[in-house]
Length: 479
Image (cartoon, rainbow, N blue to C red):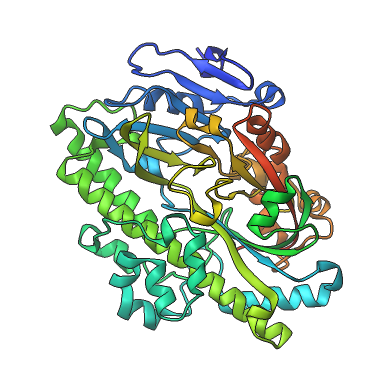
């Protein structure tokens, strides 16, 4: 029986797969009517059902509106585990640990920027920030000599070294550093892949120059420092090869160790061990290193972007604002308190979204909840939203993007260069090899408007601002 046929209505924009067979929890999937009727059968629902069969899982397992097949847990999957008796899975976090997004605001009116200035900004950023699979940093000497404090102390260490502004720390999830990182839990092979700070890699990672097209909540937008018409910068990248190798290493180890703990694995991608086992604790320590690495990656890129603006406009970067609105993480496992119970929440391709009043919000965003950044596909809109109180029902989580409808292979086969150029219209793209970006074409992704509406229509989140792209830097290849 196809998994999609098991979906039953469970409220507005919500569908349930009731526990059956070896499942220990129900599955809830959030799709609005149009997304539900266009939902393409893939392995994502079965992967949620597999996750719901793991020991210690908390009911329910969640599927986001941008859900699509991944490795182990689908992209757009959220799984909570009992902190005392549950399991931790490297595959349920993902290969690109702390793949995430940050947004910079400016005081620049894009109507005053011609195409030549936009291209100059792109080139100045590209000069400083390598893009593409396997590309290494321009800061290798510093990284090599300071790698331990970078992954143990995160962004606060970088800012102390002059790479950023002190106020940046107030606008990064966890202040740019989570505790518990231990480089001793990271393999030598993974450490060798750590020379990639201030790089964006390939796949769906990017640096995008855009503008605020629409403000939906003016008071909230003002608090976030956003106004209609301002130039913005979105940065989307993660822990690169460093995090990828950590996931690869620990997935293999967990698969080997699972039988010793009498754990029956539903799939190799969901290889798991008890949270409180030696392997479980080492994975969390290694994962923390990758999370801090990714925060540093986006921070260093921010510093390089500011320097690029300074070079193009021949003035101090602070003259153009370039302040950090927020930085959110995807692909993490973190201990949180849900309904007075400590749980380990795996978010894979999902974003933590704290509602107003939640004590872990930054102080300046306590009254509204922190900004939640949801990028669309290349050439389409991106959104700044905020969480509502109802989001507590889904572990304070929302989607992290639009979500694929075509695999990379299918996109390259079905979408032509002319199709891509037509959808991009006037959006500038770094490089001229459009064929290299066919797998990232807007046609390969769900409609971001439908994905956003899925949660806003039922009071899980509210729209604050809509961003539209002007120019985008993407690297070739798929991470």
